[in-house]
Structures are given as C-alpha cells and as structure tokens.
Amino acid sequence: MPALKSELRLTGLTKRFGKLRAIDGLDLAIPRGSFVALVGASGSGKSTLLKTINRLVEPDEGTILFEGEDVRAIRAPALRRRIGYVFQSIGLFPHMTVAQNVGIGPRLAGHPIGRERVAELLELVELEPDHAARMPNELSGGQRQRVGVARALAGNPQLLLMDEPFGALDPVTRDALGKRVRELHERLGLTTLMVTHDMAEALLLAERVLVMAKGRIVADETPRALLAGAGSEEAQALVAVPRDQADAIAELEE
Image (cartoon, rainbow, N blue to C red; front, side, top):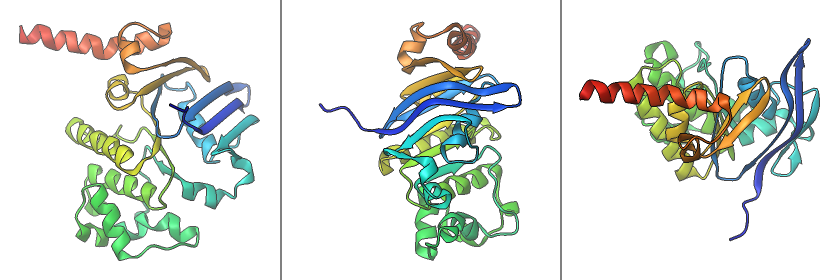
C-alpha cells in the first residue's frame, strides 16, 4: 500500500516572543486523512503552532508546506478558505445572525454561500435550519460551538484546525460534540489537528497524539502506545491523570 501524501509538513519551525521560544526548531509531517491531537501543559506552544499554519502568526524561521505549497506563497484569504479553524473562544460575531457567521469566510473570499448551503452546514453539526436566523446570544454554549464548527467547514476545507474547541462546554455536550466532529472528519475526508489540554479526549478521539513541552514535540505516539507506557515523561504524566481517575471510579464501584 503506498504511503499517504503529507497534507502538512513543518520543517525547522521557530517562533520567538522576545526571549521566549514558543516554538523551537520543530519538525512535523501530518499525512492526509489523519486525526491528530496536540496536547501539553499551558505555555507549551500548542496554540502558537496551530496559528502559524494558517498565518495568524508568522514564524521567525522554518517552512510550512501545505499540499506541497509554502503557505507564505498563498494569499491569506485563499489559504484560510482551504483551512477551517475552530477557535477556543468560539469567536462568533455578536451583531451577526448564525447564517451570517457561518458564511463570513466564503463571503470575505469572494465566494458567498446561500441559504441552502447554510442549512446543509447546520445539519452537519446537528442544528435545525431555523437556527440560521438567530443571534449568537440566543444560543447555548454548545450550540454556539456547533456554529463555530459549521463556519470552519463552510469553505469545504481540506484541513481542519481546532484550538481547545470543547474546553468551555459541559461534559455531556463536550462528549457529544467531540464524537460528532470525529464523525465529520471521517465523512468529509478531512485532515484534522486538534489542540486540547485533556489527555482523555486526545486518547479517545485521535489516532495519533503529539505531546508538546517548551516549544518542542516530546512524544509522538498512538493512543494505544501511550497507554502501554510509550512516550516521554511529560507524556506519561498526562496519561496518568485519566488513568488515575478511571482507577478511582473503579474503586468507588467496588
């Protein structure tokens, strides 16, 4: 079976903020169709790495190739049409309807979408068509984040970036939306890179888990390998949290 072509390749990537190296000479290749989780402590460089990919942050050194093209050679609006981005803070425009929020990316890129396409996108994230006319303040947190996912998918992206997409949600909503995003990843043939601080979420949703510390990737393993003890000390410290929680629950049941 031939190897999958890399959707994304980062080489020697470095980003400094003053004396701090938020990303430190990082190399990474993500094959097309992968679902990859990026975990690590706060300040490890996860979100900065994500933002360099669609040029919200410009690196100081190194290259980022997307489908073989240097992202710096692609006009930012065109690049962001090919890369969906789900923000940690959801980031809906409060003065716009749901339909306007969902369609903002294609409209700015000069390819506005109509009502039928908005309805299709809302259906993908399990929202009714009548949500299109609502304002963000009329929605629950889970509904707003579903709109954020629909907005990220509006340009038919090849790559989906998610920055702590479920962090502000209650556990039940978080679990349901995580499963839906994983289903959409498969259904739409996406390549997905998700930043999360929750190792349990990473282990359950992703097929590959990257652990960052001090701007570098210190572990790159499958969930099964991590649970079997593979990876760095930083990785195993993160794995220990859901494992200890599971053991504590098992003791309560006994």
